[in-house]
Image: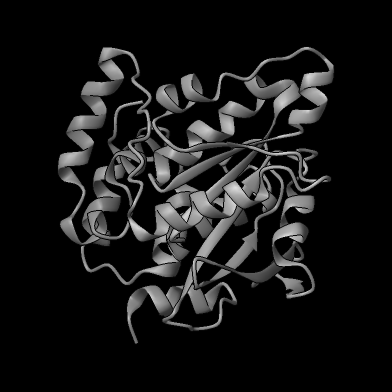
Length: 256
């Protein structure tokens, strides 16, 4: 069984070589559940994430003649894994490796939501940003420059008003285009202070090639520098990596 399929099964994703897996992420109260329900309709089911009491919801929809499995991640403000919800969302993005990730934001407080967008883009480049509640934003005379936001983030941006169905067709089309490779996002990379960037480059060079094939090496280097031991516990949980002992020794001496 291919590794990607095996990992997805561990997250309760049924094997289906003809279906693409889409993650739906976002802060609480951004209308994410409304978008999930609108896209999947009655073709959904719920349960718990493996080993967690956190609710898992997934459903299916079709677009462009292709079947999509949509996984609704827990609403979270961050992916730094300080709570069960954050850990579930981060682990799914890292280890289930969805074919695309939609990050739902609130047009009335977009700046606050962009923190999660940037964190997701550090893990995966296949991102679509959904700016929801555009109808409320317009009522408050808030203007969202979609073209500018797309250029700044380097990923597709779609505006929606999920309760009325506005923009859902465009959202499906954006997902389809990213999955098929018709749109290739080039997500903006966060650039840190020079001393941090130097440390990231040094650590990234030491990460074994087998791990680099599985996880975004830059993101992993940042977690190493941050002394995020939880991440490495998860790597050991999901991957059998022969060089793990070597990496763990290096991890002890990473710069802070």
